Structures are given as structure tokens and as C-alpha cells.
Amino acid sequence: MKENETQRTPSTPARFKVGDRVQVRDMPNIFYTRTQNYVRGVTGTIAACTYKDLIPEDEAFDYDGRLEQYYIVRFRQKDLWEEYPFGNDTLQTEYPERWLEPVRN
Image (cartoon, rainbow, N blue to C red; front, side, top):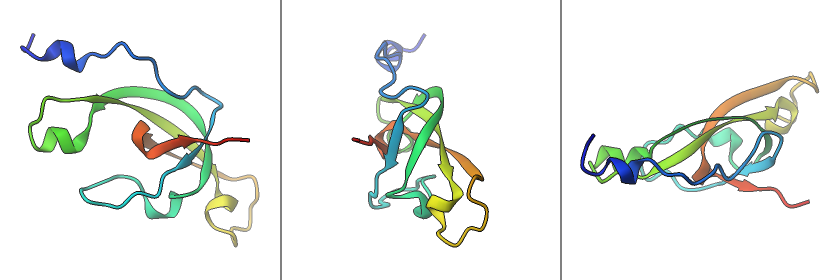
């Protein structure tokens, strides 16, 4: 086990659970991100709580890794593209926790 391995194994629970409504944050791209522009600001539903992994920017610069939770978020395609002709089709894609915020009813 590496010296800092205990720092990389958090016991904190996931912030969101399956079924929670979330909105993708509209943050600037300073570094590489897998967060597509067309989902920013759009509301979706947590479909799965997947895994925890190092924050990519920390890993790229060889910082002691902080882990973050990743989620599969499901969107209605009508919410992504107004002119989409099929109202019930969905798209699922993966996001780290820091890109998501809860939707308040």
C-alpha cells in the first residue's frame, strides 16, 4: 500500500442516490473534461452511482489524489434538443459529482 493510500479511500457516502434529480453545472473548461457542452444547465436523473476515482486534474499534475464519486445521469433527449421528434427517448452519460447540483422542487 502506498504511503498516501488512506487519503485515497474515503468513507464518505455518495452525495446523490438513484432517482435524484440533478442539474449539470455550467462551469468553464480550464482543463480537459468529459462534460459535454450540450448537457450543461440541463436537468437529468441519477440512473446509477458507479465508482470513485481520482479527480483527473489532480492526477494529471501528480497531486495527492482526492477521490470523487461518478454517476450515470439519464436525460430526456427532448430536454437536450428541443426539436428532437421522439419525446420518450433518453440519453445516459457519466459525470463526476462536482459537475452536478441538486434540483430543488
